[in-house]
Image (cartoon, rainbow, N blue to C red):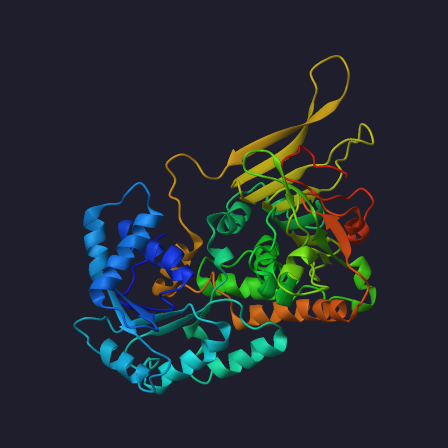
Length: 501
């Protein structure tokens, strides 16, 4: 369902950064190409240095040439380039935001509904908002004003609440759009629709029928050049706190009364607030962490490539030791009638044997068990690298004997001719539409940090050496300590029925 967008100006802070050059500006071009931008919509790119309008438009052409190797429609390009303007906002100029206001006040050049995309350092979020407010650029007495905040929104509950306090001096909650680009992925949005538009699933979506649910984000990549950031963050805060808990909310929430943004958000908030707090006194049975050591990973040409361990990568940057986890697996329970007693296993890791993001739902044992090795039914909603829904069922093997085997009903979500939409495109469109359903409400942010903070704190105080797993290996066997039952195991993407290590 498409919505009409008001004429507006998108003010893009951090225009010279990689995100803007690689994702945002090409994404806006793609939206223009798809006919989703209002005819009068304008883009004001804000950077620190002086750049002429002519040079900026030439730079944009270079960005699009790099992104769209097979070319693009010249008529669309001409229309798009006319939307684009550049504004220098040097940090040393005390009147910089007054000049920005003067520029944006030209109603003939810029629609007065203003959406700000803050692709800036997290430490600058509150400062930029304060300066915009100081010159009246957040005033909604005549037109709407919206501010998109890039992640992370705080590094723990206290810092998130402090940032919120600073922002709400100048903004209403309805004006704040906290981005989690993961929520813009089509396959993530498909979770809710798969559940609620198919009559076969909802009657089974509860503790009577489901044994457990796994939510996974694994990568074959290491930390690369992000050692400083990653060592201060870790797998738990990098992926689990945001992306994976949001995925869990979509998997487990109750059906919203309608598809309005407020209704969807309300159910996600309710679900996140229903997750049972972590028992830090028994954390070793509820959470497991590890670091990758040197090993071999599959390269693009199919050969195994030798790679260094995490600690070796840190030593290259002058860091001698670290207790930062590159592997985190956590068991969660949801305290509501639907999910009572059902464990949710949420894991994320770098340098595992395969890169895969998926929701794997294992159903309880069938009424008829022919033997101890009979597989249980699985429903897999795969997010990446392959978008698909896979359902595994037992079926008789043709022949004289009574025996079954697992059949996989595998349906690719993406088919020939489907649009390829980047998550940032979806979220920028939502920002201009005023649809916050795929952005984080402050209550969601706080619920997520409340859950994660006790684990982070307990791990920080635990000086036990971290378990090491070879790069390119599967989940450490020791991670099975969090499972509720002996017959539970980590589900992988490529094997029928999984693998019990």
